[in-house]
Structures are given as structure tokens and as C-alpha cells.
Image (cartoon, rainbow over all chains, first blue to last red):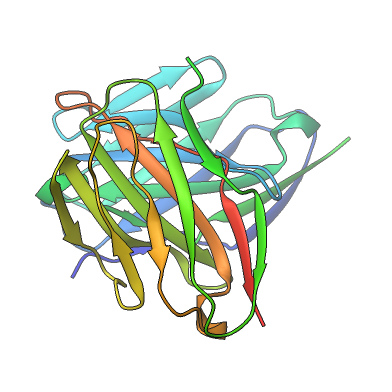
Length: 112
Length: 112
């Protein structure tokens, strides 16, 4: 059974810092991995999708990498801003009908 | 496009009552799914559908029914609500061939 872990559960950093959010998964036979952002009381916003054949994807200040063999993905946020404060969720698609297995998320607080 | 929409946003039920959570998407996506999000548990898949007339169970299907009569709509039915079904429910969709999944804003359900 696929398990997805995100550690730590919470992170607080000063504005302007570059930071890395980690995600690990137990079964390397994945189709893709998706990073989401969730603001308090809101839905999930897709940030980046990495296909299993890709090593990384970039969108603005965000860069996500994937190392399937080691079961790891990282989300890099450059020059963090208070507006980046949210919970970041990692989800793995192990293929069968696109069922996503989610980590519990990392709650990020960026201090002005 | 409105994307994925869910109604209602909030609902309070008494134990034993029934209700239907509505989900609709206007992107002509074949794949739709329902997740529930609970503190400390992350998001878990309830039911999913790969197209009109086709549904299947996810990780936590007990107590929930679904049907998919059209491409656009995927309602989730609680036949006899229980306090354990207090949760935030999210609907998601994606198109065949495009792996990125899109989530609705959620329905916050409380069962007393």
C-alpha cells in the first residue's frame, strides 16, 4: 500500500528565505506526483505536476523535483513571501484510475 | 469555465438523516472522484468514476453511494448520516490523457 509522508508538519520561516518542502513515498511505481496548496478553509489548488518520466517542473518561484528510485520529491520555493503561507500537500498517483494518495501536508508560515 | 463546483458549502445534519452533496464540472472531464479530509488523516478517496455510468469504490466507501448519469455531475449520497461522517468533502476531476487533477472548493459537513 502506497504511503506518503511529509515532514515536518509545520514550518515557520522569515520572509525572503528560500525553502524546501519534502515528500517521500513508499512505492516507486508511480505515474505522477502532484503538489497542491491549500489555504485555510479552502479547496486545493494545483501547483505542479511531475510525470514519472520527468525529473522536475518549474512554475514561477516554485520548482518541484522527483526522484522515483529513492521515493522522494521536493518543492522548492524561492524568495518566500507572506502570501506563500498555506498548507502544501503532496499527492502520488499510483496509476489505477488516477487514485491519489496524499500526504498530510506541511503548514508553512512566512513571517514578514 | 467555472471549473469544479460543489454545493452546499456548509451543511449540518442530524444522525440518521440523508443528503446529497453535489459536484459538477464544465470541463468535459471523464474522471471524477470524491475525497474526504479529516484532521490528522489527510485526504482519502471515497468513490470515483471513469466516465458516465461507471463508478467504483475508493479507500473509504462505507456509508456513501454515488452514481454518474452524465459527464458533468457526480453526486455523493449519504443514506443515513453518522457523526463519523463529519468531515470536509472534496470533489475532483481530470481529463483522460491529462494527469493534472482539479479540485472543488469543498463541502464542510457536520453530523450531530
